[in-house]
Image (cartoon, rainbow, N blue to C red):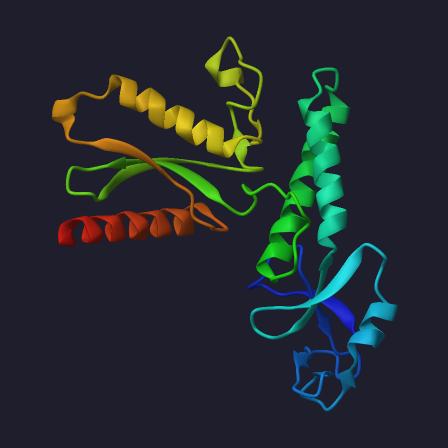
Length: 230
Protein backbone atom coordinates (compact mmCIF):
# COMPACT_ATOMS: atom_id res chain seq x y z
CA UNK A 1 0.00 0.00 0.00
CA UNK A 2 1.06 3.63 -0.50
CA UNK A 3 3.05 5.45 2.16
CA UNK A 4 2.40 8.95 3.43
CA UNK A 5 4.56 11.98 2.78
CA UNK A 6 4.24 15.74 3.13
CA UNK A 7 4.00 17.97 0.06
CA UNK A 8 5.75 21.38 0.28
CA UNK A 9 2.93 23.14 -1.56
CA UNK A 10 0.20 21.82 0.76
CA UNK A 11 -0.63 22.38 4.45
CA UNK A 12 1.03 20.06 6.96
CA UNK A 13 -2.40 18.58 7.78
CA UNK A 14 -2.49 17.07 4.28
CA UNK A 15 -0.38 13.97 3.61
CA UNK A 16 0.05 12.83 0.03
CA UNK A 17 0.14 9.09 -0.65
CA UNK A 18 3.39 7.95 -2.22
CA UNK A 19 3.87 4.80 -4.28
CA UNK A 20 5.52 2.00 -2.30
CA UNK A 21 6.62 0.23 -5.50
CA UNK A 22 8.86 2.95 -6.94
CA UNK A 23 9.32 4.84 -3.65
CA UNK A 24 8.88 8.36 -5.01
CA UNK A 25 5.85 8.68 -7.29
CA UNK A 26 2.44 9.97 -6.19
CA UNK A 27 -0.95 8.81 -7.37
CA UNK A 28 -3.15 10.91 -9.63
CA UNK A 29 -6.84 10.42 -10.34
CA UNK A 30 -7.67 8.57 -13.55
CA UNK A 31 -10.86 8.51 -15.60
CA UNK A 32 -11.22 4.80 -14.82
CA UNK A 33 -11.87 5.51 -11.12
CA UNK A 34 -8.39 4.35 -10.12
CA UNK A 35 -5.37 6.30 -8.86
CA UNK A 36 -2.26 5.82 -10.98
CA UNK A 37 1.47 6.24 -10.35
CA UNK A 38 3.78 7.06 -13.26
CA UNK A 39 5.55 3.73 -12.67
CA UNK A 40 2.40 1.86 -13.68
CA UNK A 41 1.08 0.97 -10.23
CA UNK A 42 -2.52 1.77 -9.42
CA UNK A 43 -4.81 1.62 -6.37
CA UNK A 44 -8.56 1.69 -5.90
CA UNK A 45 -10.34 4.06 -3.49
CA UNK A 46 -11.69 1.02 -1.62
CA UNK A 47 -8.14 -0.27 -1.08
CA UNK A 48 -7.10 3.10 0.34
CA UNK A 49 -10.12 3.23 2.65
CA UNK A 50 -9.38 -0.21 4.11
CA UNK A 51 -5.94 0.95 5.24
CA UNK A 52 -6.91 4.30 6.73
CA UNK A 53 -7.26 5.11 10.41
CA UNK A 54 -10.86 5.56 11.49
CA UNK A 55 -10.30 9.33 11.95
CA UNK A 56 -8.96 9.84 8.41
CA UNK A 57 -10.46 10.17 4.93
CA UNK A 58 -8.88 10.19 1.49
CA UNK A 59 -9.20 13.16 -0.84
CA UNK A 60 -7.84 14.58 -4.07
CA UNK A 61 -5.61 17.66 -3.95
CA UNK A 62 -6.05 20.62 -6.33
CA UNK A 63 -3.18 19.05 -8.31
CA UNK A 64 -5.18 15.80 -8.61
CA UNK A 65 -2.94 13.80 -6.25
CA UNK A 66 -4.32 11.21 -3.83
CA UNK A 67 -4.01 12.45 -0.25
CA UNK A 68 -5.29 11.91 3.29
CA UNK A 69 -6.68 14.36 5.84
CA UNK A 70 -8.43 14.10 9.18
CA UNK A 71 -12.17 13.60 8.67
CA UNK A 72 -13.93 16.99 8.97
CA UNK A 73 -16.44 15.60 11.48
CA UNK A 74 -13.60 14.40 13.73
CA UNK A 75 -11.71 17.70 13.47
CA UNK A 76 -14.93 19.65 14.10
CA UNK A 77 -15.63 17.68 17.28
CA UNK A 78 -12.10 18.27 18.57
CA UNK A 79 -12.33 21.95 17.64
CA UNK A 80 -15.56 22.39 19.65
CA UNK A 81 -14.19 20.49 22.65
CA UNK A 82 -11.04 22.63 22.72
CA UNK A 83 -13.09 25.79 22.26
CA UNK A 84 -15.27 24.81 25.23
CA UNK A 85 -12.19 24.40 27.42
CA UNK A 86 -10.77 27.74 26.24
CA UNK A 87 -14.03 29.52 27.09
CA UNK A 88 -14.16 27.96 30.57
CA UNK A 89 -12.66 30.39 33.15
CA UNK A 90 -11.97 27.42 35.41
CA UNK A 91 -9.49 25.95 32.92
CA UNK A 92 -6.03 27.48 33.23
CA UNK A 93 -2.34 26.55 33.35
CA UNK A 94 -1.24 23.37 31.52
CA UNK A 95 -4.82 22.24 30.69
CA UNK A 96 -5.47 25.60 29.00
CA UNK A 97 -2.19 25.39 27.10
CA UNK A 98 -3.16 21.89 25.93
CA UNK A 99 -6.54 23.26 24.79
CA UNK A 100 -4.74 25.96 22.78
CA UNK A 101 -2.63 23.33 21.02
CA UNK A 102 -5.67 21.13 20.33
CA UNK A 103 -7.64 24.14 19.05
CA UNK A 104 -4.93 25.11 16.58
CA UNK A 105 -4.42 21.51 15.46
CA UNK A 106 -8.13 20.90 14.86
CA UNK A 107 -8.45 24.25 13.10
CA UNK A 108 -5.56 23.38 10.77
CA UNK A 109 -7.24 20.06 9.99
CA UNK A 110 -10.54 21.77 9.19
CA UNK A 111 -8.84 24.31 6.96
CA UNK A 112 -7.03 21.48 5.14
CA UNK A 113 -10.29 19.59 4.58
CA UNK A 114 -11.90 22.80 3.33
CA UNK A 115 -9.01 23.36 0.92
CA UNK A 116 -9.41 19.81 -0.40
CA UNK A 117 -13.07 20.50 -1.16
CA UNK A 118 -14.51 18.02 1.33
CA UNK A 119 -18.03 18.46 2.65
CA UNK A 120 -17.89 20.31 5.94
CA UNK A 121 -20.07 19.47 8.97
CA UNK A 122 -23.43 21.19 9.35
CA UNK A 123 -23.24 24.30 11.50
CA UNK A 124 -19.48 24.71 11.16
CA UNK A 125 -17.99 28.06 12.16
CA UNK A 126 -18.14 30.31 9.08
CA UNK A 127 -15.01 32.13 10.28
CA UNK A 128 -12.81 29.12 9.51
CA UNK A 129 -10.40 29.86 6.68
CA UNK A 130 -11.17 33.58 6.65
CA UNK A 131 -8.97 36.51 7.56
CA UNK A 132 -10.88 39.53 8.84
CA UNK A 133 -9.12 42.76 7.98
CA UNK A 134 -10.05 46.13 9.38
CA UNK A 135 -9.07 48.31 6.43
CA UNK A 136 -8.30 52.00 6.32
CA UNK A 137 -9.58 53.17 2.94
CA UNK A 138 -8.46 56.41 1.31
CA UNK A 139 -10.89 58.88 -0.21
CA UNK A 140 -10.15 57.42 -3.67
CA UNK A 141 -11.13 53.92 -2.46
CA UNK A 142 -7.62 52.46 -2.26
CA UNK A 143 -6.24 50.56 0.73
CA UNK A 144 -4.09 52.63 3.08
CA UNK A 145 -3.49 50.03 5.80
CA UNK A 146 -5.12 47.24 7.75
CA UNK A 147 -5.16 45.17 10.92
CA UNK A 148 -5.85 41.45 10.61
CA UNK A 149 -7.62 38.88 12.78
CA UNK A 150 -8.17 35.17 12.10
CA UNK A 151 -9.16 32.09 14.06
CA UNK A 152 -6.14 30.56 15.77
CA UNK A 153 -3.80 33.49 15.10
CA UNK A 154 -2.02 35.01 18.11
CA UNK A 155 -4.40 37.53 19.67
CA UNK A 156 -3.89 39.79 22.65
CA UNK A 157 -7.61 40.67 22.74
CA UNK A 158 -8.49 37.04 23.56
CA UNK A 159 -5.89 36.87 26.35
CA UNK A 160 -6.32 38.29 29.88
CA UNK A 161 -5.33 41.94 30.05
CA UNK A 162 -1.87 42.40 31.57
CA UNK A 163 -1.03 45.39 33.75
CA UNK A 164 2.32 45.72 31.96
CA UNK A 165 2.42 45.81 28.16
CA UNK A 166 5.56 43.68 27.91
CA UNK A 167 3.86 40.90 29.87
CA UNK A 168 0.77 40.82 27.68
CA UNK A 169 0.09 37.25 26.53
CA UNK A 170 -1.43 36.26 23.20
CA UNK A 171 -3.98 33.46 22.98
CA UNK A 172 -5.36 31.78 19.86
CA UNK A 173 -8.00 34.12 18.45
CA UNK A 174 -11.60 32.92 18.90
CA UNK A 175 -13.61 35.96 17.72
CA UNK A 176 -11.85 37.47 14.68
CA UNK A 177 -14.99 38.92 13.13
CA UNK A 178 -16.00 40.66 16.36
CA UNK A 179 -12.46 41.97 16.88
CA UNK A 180 -12.32 43.36 13.33
CA UNK A 181 -15.62 45.21 13.65
CA UNK A 182 -14.73 46.42 17.14
CA UNK A 183 -11.47 47.83 15.77
CA UNK A 184 -13.30 49.54 12.89
CA UNK A 185 -15.80 51.15 15.23
CA UNK A 186 -12.99 52.26 17.55
CA UNK A 187 -11.06 53.86 14.72
CA UNK A 188 -14.17 55.55 13.35
CA UNK A 189 -14.88 57.15 16.72
CA UNK A 190 -11.59 59.06 16.56
CA UNK A 191 -11.58 59.82 12.85
CA UNK A 192 -12.50 63.30 11.63
CA UNK A 193 -14.64 63.86 8.55
CA UNK A 194 -11.92 66.05 7.07
CA UNK A 195 -9.53 63.11 7.09
CA UNK A 196 -11.25 61.67 4.03
CA UNK A 197 -10.55 58.11 5.11
CA UNK A 198 -13.07 55.49 6.12
CA UNK A 199 -12.86 52.11 7.84
CA UNK A 200 -14.17 48.88 6.36
CA UNK A 201 -14.03 45.17 7.24
CA UNK A 202 -13.11 42.78 4.44
CA UNK A 203 -13.00 39.01 5.05
CA UNK A 204 -11.34 37.08 2.22
CA UNK A 205 -10.59 33.37 2.32
CA UNK A 206 -6.82 33.21 2.68
CA UNK A 207 -4.17 30.98 4.20
CA UNK A 208 -1.81 33.79 5.21
CA UNK A 209 -1.65 37.53 5.79
CA UNK A 210 0.04 38.57 2.47
CA UNK A 211 -2.62 36.71 0.49
CA UNK A 212 -5.39 38.20 2.62
CA UNK A 213 -4.12 41.74 2.09
CA UNK A 214 -3.76 41.18 -1.64
CA UNK A 215 -7.33 39.89 -1.90
CA UNK A 216 -8.67 42.67 0.30
CA UNK A 217 -7.01 45.26 -1.94
CA UNK A 218 -8.58 43.57 -4.98
CA UNK A 219 -12.04 43.74 -3.36
CA UNK A 220 -11.61 47.43 -2.59
CA UNK A 221 -10.36 48.14 -6.12
CA UNK A 222 -13.40 46.35 -7.53
CA UNK A 223 -15.67 48.46 -5.34
CA UNK A 224 -13.88 51.60 -6.50
CA UNK A 225 -14.26 50.62 -10.16
CA UNK A 226 -17.95 49.84 -9.68
CA UNK A 227 -18.58 53.15 -7.91
CA UNK A 228 -16.80 55.04 -10.68
CA UNK A 229 -19.11 53.56 -13.31
CA UNK A 230 -22.35 54.21 -11.43
